Amino acid sequence: MIEALKEWVARKDFFMLLLVFLTVPIFAHAGGLGIAAIIGLCGLVALAGFPPRMSEIKNRFPMPVRMLLLLLVWGWISSFWSPYQSDDIMTNPVKLMLGVPVFLLCAYLIKMSASVPKKAKILTGILCVGTLALSVSILVDQLSGYAISFAVDPLDPGQDLTARIGDMIQNIGHATSVLTLLLAPVSVLLWTRGRIGKAASLTLVVLTLACGFTTGQSASTLGALTALLLMGLASRRPVLALRTGFLLAGASILFAPLLAFLSAHLGANIKNALPFSWEERVENWSYLSQKLSQHPIVGHGFDAVRMFNDTHTIRGFEGRALVSLHPHNAGLHIWVELGVIGAVLSCTALYFALRYLSVPNRLSKTQMVATSGLLIAVVTMSSLSYGVWQDWWWASIIFAGAQVFFINKPKPILYQNL
Image (cartoon, rainbow, N blue to C red; front, side):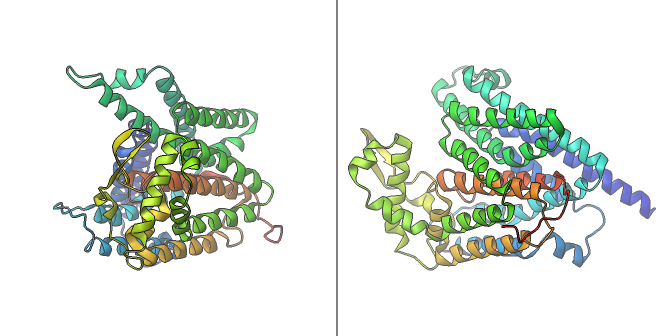
């Protein structure tokens, strides 16, 4: 009876992982919002079966994860003094505080499946084909005037075409970001699979850069380029690259107020020379420099930036929001809403993550290459684009990070070779 139950649990978990791996590229192309739902569902379903022992829970939630969860709890606490209030029982901070643990449980299932050769072969095959298919579908959709999107979801009678195209631009932008997150782990995974794998890896790199360029997603393009740069360093000095990635991640948060200060003192001529989207970012960050000084310790509270309704005129466009839902910079987002306490908790979580991953032989060289690339891609895109509290973004990052478990661990790394 017990053995039969164990077998049922294993099949149930693998079925959910198959569902996740098959649908993530589809949800990504549709804008990414469904990614949080399917990965969260997988994590919840993982709880059905044998309850984990306390030692297993400890292994699933090491110190960096506990610090991360503490940051999310602080975010929830800060919501009580935030000017943004919701009547929903499942408020945004509650969704994230409950969502991230189940996202991590899905990642844990991926880790367990990676140790079973047959399961790993099936899942990695779906992952590689799905990622390449996602890159092709983004490129075709963009170059064809959203032919794929219109074919799947035709324009309804009377529907505003301009608004619909605006939604498609956003969806394709999100899809390109998810693709950029998958670039490092999937390209490394392909690279280790012989000549055909290397050719597929290079193809994925070219397609990802092409998607970023054609969609005008500068954050994704820069994310891909910085990922390739740090992966190149990691191929020779893996530990140095990993430490560099975490150092830059911590600096992007710790010194975010400096970015706001410099933006506030940037000359008009320099601003006018910037692309329109970048000038808006600079104006955004400049405006937040005033907000930082108002509640520097505890911040304005979770989602408070949604209530910053001041507008300005820029390049002839009137009534443009100075802050459009979020600051387009993770560090400033954390500082403004969670204050210095949130910034310290974030940097502490990164510190423990570096310590955890730097334990000798925890990661192989190839795994460090993938981890370094993913890390700097996340840092780059989070510093220029998405808000900190978007659950689909968290789910996508955790899913992409879990793919590192599929990469081979050929031999121990000589840690003295920095």
